[in-house]
Image (cartoon, rainbow, N blue to C red; front, top):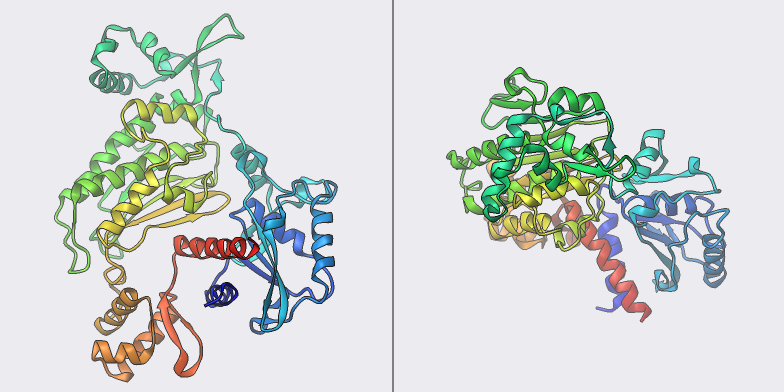
Length: 504
């Protein structure tokens, strides 16, 4: 199969998905479409993506072609380099490629995601024309979203020195527990012999203000990590941490266990205390016998403990504590764990799971965790989580990143076991499709020994619930696993690689 055939197939496969955050098709017979720059801004401010010129999207995907591609490409670059129109040009020659498909010319334009320190990308020399990508559309950001972009551009949100906070604003029990942990890891440093303030300066909880006679002042990170609940709320009134265990409960029950800041059962709870308590509770869910069924079996409890610890630390380290739109929350369900925090993740989905790159927004806070031996290798948390899932053949972890929040779902079930609501026949068909990846109806009937009626019914159920998707028509129809965010991003990256290969 040729490169262009590969490109065509990948594009067609992505077109069959219910949503496509990474692709935008635009007709462009004789000139650049007027709304291309809104999409440019949206892709640059979100996760990047491809604009394909010369393709009509409705009522169905069809290639219409581009009549004068060289002129359109010149117009594209001329406008992209016009600062009064576009705040940042992200395009290089290799990002814009002409292709011939079905005898017609199309133009593929890869818009990379802008680096966090240079966001947002806006139009007409006006921040009011900043766009983001949501599902399949381009939307102007709200005031809150614009403020998030500005905060996201900073690598040091939590280092601010606080004038009116003292040692008395810290939870003494947290301070002493933290001190003992650090001393146990570094006994030669004799931290227990230091007074509390000396120790906390050494840790960076307090820092010496060079602009104010080197007075020790509490950092925002120190307040979050070791502060009393009232002291934290006085600076950050939106501060809220929550853990909920819903495993095994009925639909009418809310939880079997809960940890929440502000609750009388957990007075003066801070980030450090929350981490210590919730880590133990997560470990307890592993130690409990939760062999839910043949498709959800507890495997490698040590590896699962590590994956959960990394997910918990990652949530707390990367949260935007200045955001007031959502809580920082851990939820335990029957088949998965969910970790949610306000704040857009500052690396891409693929970078997170590939490992090796970390762009924390709370650089001071992360040092406290690393001193405890948590997340001490930068950028490895996502890779650890993914490796665990692959090794145990669990459903792939899901990472949903929006402009205002990040949600990680860590499964402890196989793809088949992740859908207990399905009947046995439908789950059997699902398991087969997951194993084979891309199959015909006749293959399913032959290999599963199910009747044509049962297979057709199962396929319709799976498609209606967006668990699988179909490609082609009639006897040529193939059925595939509905891709996760990870898989969709990987497909978009394959398009980029094919384009670059074609260019070279």
